[in-house]
Length: 473
Image (cartoon, rainbow, N blue to C red):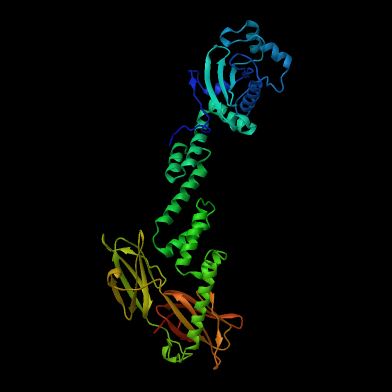
């Protein structure tokens, strides 16, 4: 990961540092000597870079830059600088002048510009007291880095930052490099190296996002993948938002989830086709309504208005130790360990047909259906119960009284048609499983039931049936 692509492909930094203690000491009472070219002459480029380096130094906390060019007396400055050649051979008067303004370190710079416009700068930090070179460093600016004032000043700022605070510069460099690699492993490695750095929060968010996205990519079941994608769309930090939208749109279409597709993608690629599919489905419902005959023979109860209290029985489930959770009739009973290989759960269920979903740590293990007529024990439900298809679609037809105003099933309002005998009929297509049914009259909800859909069937006067689940026959 540590590639040392510093600042840009055109920026080269090389350090030669002598032992001098803490590097930030370079910045204490620092005097910037006017830069020159290789021949010792002052040029437009050398003056420009002198000012920009000096400005960059003043932006670093802890740096004390003396007698800044933009504010100093030009006469006094010229007098101090007139005869200096090198710190190793300072005239006494110049040495005394620098000591007068309490300078401890002097920064020299050599600037060269080639015929293509590229600029090189070599800087040297030298101790005024010991006459030693504390640090030498160089930078090479190409193209827009040299010609564009904003690009040049930013590169100079980073260059000086690398000289004075190399640890902070390492984190900035590593962060830019990590963003280029842009993988979960790269962000995790960055956090290991800079666990308390200024980019920690962004790196942690990137890791969490990559984990969530990889979890979605590894999910093979369409229904679960759709749910994960919907959750991902609601995250505040999404690095794969466009890919998630494209994947969710395709899955909703391929799995015939037309209503949700149109809700989330009303202008999507398949929006028009989804509307046509729903129109065809509504036509099928209407044909079912028109062809409905006598419904008395298929009512869950023989007499309208009668109700009975269903008998309940205790059902005990024995499952393997690897089972993490079971879902029975919409409830999650508590699993207790019997031994190292078995767990047990008990639940009271009404007579009739029920469904069970068995989950392991890695997700759904099986989905089954079974019937209850007495107290019973079921061992290993994934092995002995009849398979059911959790994605099968069935048509539920409801016949209600003339005063009913509205019927909702699974959060959707049925379209009711009035028959010659005054009763109203509505139908809806549902996936197998539990669904909530609500009936409204005179502005109030008059009943709320749970409908168990295992096949296409018809219920008449649902509010008059016994409390609990309906089973289709």
